[in-house]
Image (cartoon, helix red, strand yellow):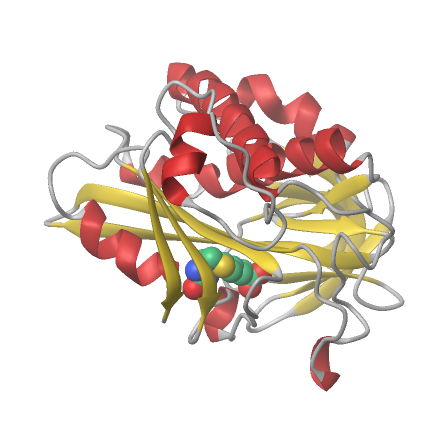
Length: 281
Ligand code: BTN
């Protein structure tokens, strides 16, 4: 195996494929210097036969996509911008759970490689010292109600030092949180290894039953008050943890038959935001 002495900056796909110790995920890597969005490329590839486990990686994205129609800033050399193609034979309703699986995998990989104390903001942001270091955008493609593929897009801020005005209070990078030079290949490998591990467990039951504990252990704001911002309604409650479907259980109060009663709501990821009562976390 040759040594790439620009590891922190240059991602070389041939080198990386040799480097991967996974069974399937990321064993094939398609690398681009510049793309609009790795999710778009992965989605097109995912419609074809094969390609399960293929990883699309880019050095920069010109139109990186975030959740809820936002943009995702993906500057050259400063992060890991990648999309994993999955073609599982599962019920389409269970597909969104893969986004929580990805959060588990990234969280585990970051903790292992950087030693930083990261946690998960439900459903799938990775947080270090109260700021977001990684976002995950899961998209699926269907044909006649049949699942063609699921794309798990992962954006990790590795060495960004400045962020745009609107996000600078809530965004961070591994470097900004004190991580020294890291080997991006090693981090990618570690994330893919964990992803493969958690994915196999998920497939056995098509649920997060066996992973609730691992997820809740790292869930930020567990047992704290959170604000749930839904399209029509905003309310506060105590975040208890996820259930086996990946929904966030929130203890809150409701007026039922004129009486204030304690209820546990199950919040479904999608067009919902969760905040701490005093701000982003
Ligand atoms: C979020 O809003 O938190 C999700 C951000 C997801 C960004 C990643 S970067 C790689 C992949 N390609 C994209 O266009 N988006 C995802």
